[in-house]
Image 1 (cartoon, one colour):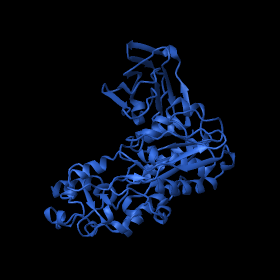
Image 2: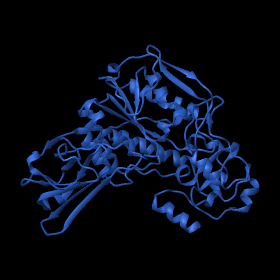
Image 3: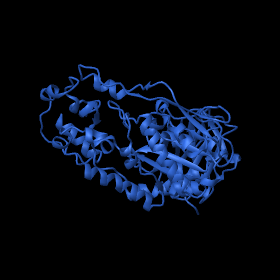
Image 4: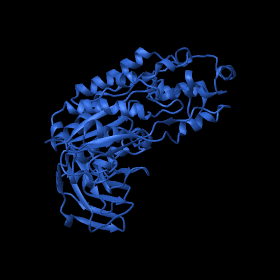
Length: 445
């Protein structure tokens, strides 16, 4: 088992030293909740800290956060493409629970897993510094979350999400950063009031997994509930993919941290900024689900926000899936595209079209934009023959939790110069009359 855990740590680039320690039955005796075998749990390896706080081994105890120069450059390209069209990207990497609440870590975090707070903190700061060196507005939440005082901590005990106290503190820090940026004065002005409601419990997959290894009930993930309303209209916070008013708006994309109603993150942002914040976040969408759904949507193209807040936990590696998702985002943001004449698009079947290309039309840095004509489409495949007779194929599949838009962006890279003069596009759903194909460029030309 230790061998498998060690191999997993190496594959994901996590600087955790796994050494033999007092695991198993000995740990159960010291557990406040009768927990045993948490560290070797195949579903969610964790450690039990003090005062009922639990930490995930892979996500919370990692000391190396991956962000290569190449990935940072790709994120910078997205920021530049957005800025070219009047939108400032504000990137918000959420620090790990162990960085924010080290006082509750068990001794085993260091003795058995080699966790070193100073190393982990330097790694976190290194990611922020690298992003900023690439010109990306990046918000450092660590000290603000650590300073969070009061009865409620910034993170739940038996869950990894932030509480409403953590969300509120983070919203305040983000608002401070945005107010210091050019364009902040252009935002729509509105007055908001945040009212406490009854305490709320969240549905926690982490607590459920942990509970299976414990005899006593773990702390419930409960937090003080809040409701933010616009005082001049009485309308409460914004629905996902709602239509904000034109000009000077703020959009939020992110993970379940931003999509957690009990934490009221978007509401706190609206009040802190004194402007409506439209929340497009998606739970379970990981690092790209929400922002890809939003940037490829008609809503974004028709009404771009002045500021786009992108929330993403620090441990969600932006380079995990290669650079194709980042290239797609940059291309969707810039929209430097030339539409192919519809007369060159021919149906080959109920879900497939053939596109005739002109000599040199697609460069090696180009991206093929394909719209199925059906916004419910979630799957597209680009294929063509190379000059040497080999086949090239690339597919994009939108996960179930993403909002479908029917819009896909395919980087063709160096294969373009070897492509034949015809490409094929196959979709899971196709409306031929509304379909469109364009040749785009993610960077300024």
